[in-house]
Image 1 (tube, one colour):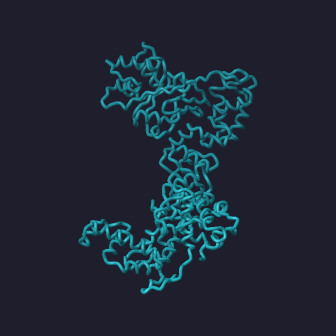
Image 2: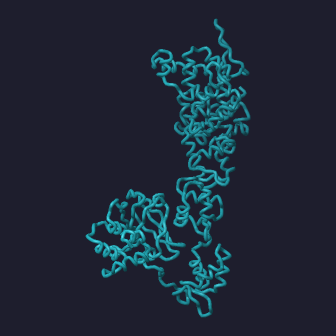
Image 3: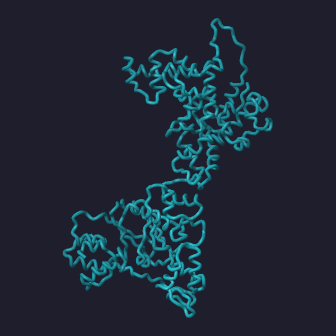
Length: 620
């Protein structure tokens, strides 16, 4: 025998030597013995069972997901049932026993030929064309057998048993029996000496294909695969494909073992984040995928993507996709750049909302976002950053210094910084510098006062117990999980101030409200899901003194509701009213006006607040 273990075990040819050596090295054998010396010599030096033990240990450690017949193809002929099992399912001891039996049988001495009255068939010549060999097999069959082979066993689109039964005027059960006998006949022929060259070719082919390969590659692996089998009128590769037992065709790929399992193993390689494409290809080859098709395999695996010459996890969440884009870029990007690199149907508004609401992202300039893990100062808006510069300077600072610091670090103009410095929120000190208005000389801040009280804030309404609620008009972005802005007046009512954060607890999961450039509420998709809310519905929400998110859901108003009732519906009031006067009284109370408020005063407050939808129903 002049075959090494690598010649008999295809995975040894595509597995990294660095993985093989620590497991298979044997003191009694030379370095890289599995490909350096014939198997019979290795077994003579170390023992057949020792060689089988090393191979079994390697199979369990590195090829646990492959079928045993793909690891040692000879096992498909000696034990076809066990050949369909995996090392993971059998365990090392059983795998060693099976491998050892194959090696012992392979190394048995060949007895001298026994004289027989009838000559035994001579083995095919090694250089005989394999298509000719296959044609000889099917050429000896009758028309029915060849038709079943061509139109069912080796067809890309199989005809039914009934069609063949009608064609040959027999029962469908007779066609089924012929098909079964035909399969057994081909399997028996493969075990005979004349088919040894084809069996050797299939063994070589498994090593050439690896654990995953585009299905089209089978047709071009060797020239004769494209040749026509004259007896059947089909290309030879269609017959060869049926001999590759253990390979599953999935989405135009041939995959050894389970396609889903190999995809999951591939995804797990990149679970910790982006990897350069070159390194990613090397990682995937450790799973048995050939290097020349590894990148194509990565692209074929759901939830993986090649981005900027990096392989990145690509889940469904827009947040995680934006995180992957920034991680690959390694530098802050604008929402427009992130949207372009994601390249999917996500609105720019939705991306901005997620970048603002998710703690993984940090706004680092007027229109740029980076990853929080990168560190650095957060861009809070010009007014807030002026206040931060004043705080760093000890409570007061010169406008020139503030201008120089901010324009050197951010994309803001000097005129904008000077305009904000002289506007509301700041006041001059005795030496001409500025400080935050309402602070003591030492810089201690007074409670934040919004420009608009909650009673003057759009879509904010007071209930009977005095608690203020905010109405969210449900849209597609809310349902997709995007965050959304909150009015400043309502956020201040909740006790928040610029730079702060509030976590409201809910049975369906916490909702984070943060205030950077503006107050922003994180995703409420779980809340909407519990209510089975649809686009056009309304959700009223507030936060209790104990930090609990309180919510109430109203479906979209029914068609034909009277205008006054429709206006009250937007306040969350669903009971009928007897007159417009009663409705206006209720509305006035909900926006913080006394019972004595006139119709014009109520409409005026709604106009100031910006509640144009409600005004429309009141004729205002």
